[in-house]
Image (cartoon, rainbow, N blue to C red; front, side, top):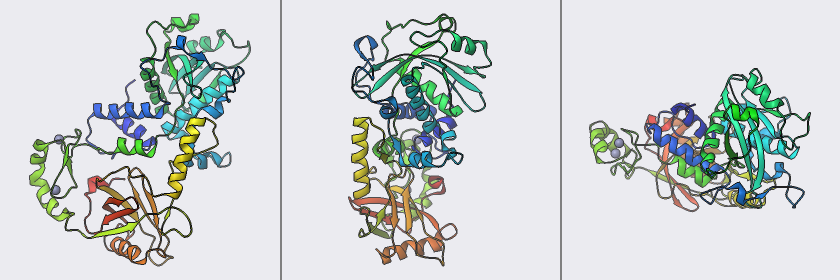
Length: 433
Ligand SMILES: [Zn+2]
Ligand SMILES: [Zn+2]
């Protein structure tokens, strides 16, 4: 079950690592990036090995452990809004976004275990692909982080329609009451590919000698052994570092330098840069940012008295789930997002921003400014900075799509400052988002 190039780009996008759909990054670089994203999204494994024989069993009763629903992770604002929608009007995100879908499935597996059931069948809506999975046991990786040891089989076609699935579900499970059912968990098709990748990656951490007892049908079907950990959203910084390099303009390999003339195209090295010079020459002259007109706008936190209203970033984590460590991280992140300027994930580097100006003739609603991965999301208010507002508005009216939407180069010129180059347009390839 290979994950294709387009699927990797889509999954990374679902994890908020937005690469341009036409990126020339080679497949192995994309695969590495997905692997890294998954590592970062899982509760950290700090040693080289996860050896169940050296870990304590996870138990709610024996300690003051919280129920799984509280332990399994945090939700983002985006997801909170989705989950708060009335039943029946639920945002279809859950069934579109592979990452959210996977995270929900893992939470369900945890909650299910709390209720005494150890079997799960994970399938997509069309039952094109599925997993049968049994939780062998749950151990404490740390006081706050459970490790679910699982045995699983995956394949195409509905598991329920297959003999194997029926045997899997009906065979007695040690520690499970007779008559207690497994659960059926719906995910997207891509979420299952992602789940498979997670399981394959995690299996490498188990010692080779570790061999929990399999039930006869699991043995017969060659069930594999791995583990699951809580899966959490990536932080802004992680998203920033995973989205940064979109590949050499010519060959797609990792970039090593930018064109010194304009700073707007990146290459893997001299060979590709030279190969592109005949094409880029003219564009380079037009794009030279040094002689461009730069507008500097201040950034400040939320509040009616603030110069600018900056939204709480949609990736900010909301509290409400009880994993103390995750919660502490989330709370500090939320606070800094709400009160301070957006975190600088770009360093000194130039990046492209999208500027959306309200339609002409109406109220002068805030101008929205954001980068591809939305590490920065600004609502620029007319009453707070008339001249800056008018400069952006004028530029958009004159050069933008419908006079409302433009892309420009920007850089952070201070913790609370963003500079925007008004009169240089990034290339069309760089602005497909
Ligand atoms: Zn190259
Ligand atoms: Zn150039």
